[in-house]
Image (cartoon, rainbow, N blue to C red; front, side):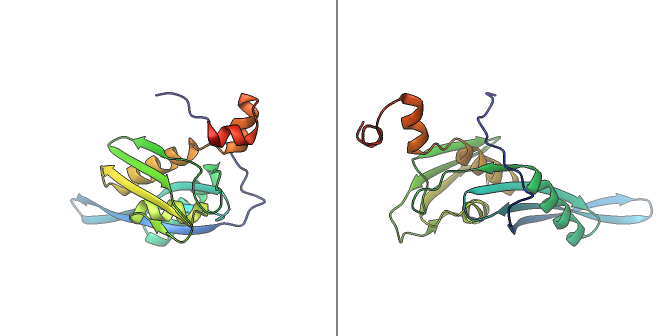
Length: 172
């Protein structure tokens, strides 16, 4: 797998909102009976272009969520958001999950399913068309969505890299 160009962000200077995506109950059967543990996948974001996800495992749901939030704050990326939408179409993949993100006109809203919606709202996207294909496993969908967002580039970066004016980036 190719190395991604991910822009890391420090979590100490930013205020985050966390969203619980999924809680999985795991049962271990032993001679003494059943033992339950929980795995929680959590997404954190500042709703202004920074997002991260994390997995927490513990014997109690609240402890698993707290661990997931701590893990998410260690895996933050910066995403370009232009006028409340993504800058261009992008496909993201992780394992069996495949997601497609497409910019939308103002007022469209976030047209996306559960796990994708949590990531997109946490990053601060207000208008986007999104489709999840393949696996519906929340862990894989979250990771595929973050993969798609991490590949996004804003037009200002493209114009600087190519050494051309902004109007040529939009008009070809």
